[in-house]
Image (cartoon, rainbow, N blue to C red; front, side):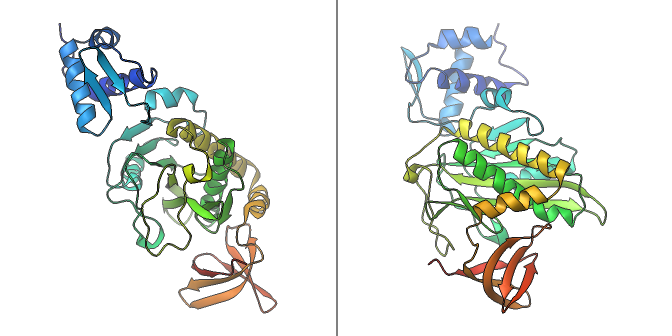
Length: 330
């Protein structure tokens, strides 16, 4: 009997992808996959055709199916057992999506638990801060959003993007990327190039944060042209390392989870100190665009609320928002 009817189609396709990814370069027969999934060989063929139509590079012959060895799929069922609290999933991954932040925000409004992850191989409406478009080459970046429910006030939540950036930087270094720095508030740099960006959004009232979503894009492989970028676009591959995207997701989520728990338990002091060790703008002359005009001075790190501190003519100015439009890179 063919049990490929009703619910569970996406799950079966994921299980096929997981089976092929676990046997890189090896042909797996349709019969073996059918026995593993408990369905017919015809159903396996339909699932493989659907995966190929979605852009997954699977070669299909009479000898069986083989995933292109250069492919780098993120398979939730392989990732989730490796995750730990508080960011332990569930993980959903799609070939294409409008915006992972938009999808995660809709789920958060519906009560999805903290740690829920929405990821995609390609975003058609991805965005950064101030409405900038996020540009990606399909399958060459790690793009995902995690739902958070921090027990802090809206004012205290100003530190959240810094906490996430620190965790992301820790995860990159755990995967072999050296010299990772952070440019306030949301750019992650290595080798003098921007390798990742962060966009945090939240819903809150005057007393508490209901939910937050932290979206991240990490350039793993080749990067498309990004006109008008503040930083030279870069990638992990260009820096000499290219971790598997699933391994990178596990490392980054684990590191963010540790930073997040430490912040909630111990407060902002450790975050401020850790940021200081990765601060790309420390001591540099910067220009920050604000609603009331440009602020020009020397970068002095962040304060306990995550605000950027700039020394201007002997005084320190703390900026809760703004755009770094100029940096003395000397």
